[in-house]
Length: 83
Image (tube, rainbow, N blue to C red; front, side):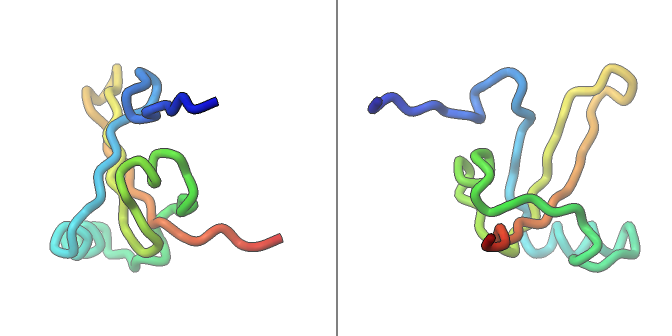
């Protein structure tokens, strides 16, 4: 029961990075969007927890792509609503 799993080391989990304030500002300006328009991911997602992410962080997810070579996606970390 005491075994822990490093989700980021699994081959199916793409690279997750917390973006700094300047990177977020540039991202929003490039795409002419607001923070709230980014797709969301929950604060208790295993990858978010593994990188030390918190509500309000923007996460850059980088995947290898057969067609594009490398694809980046961005997610805003939000708190999971209570049931």
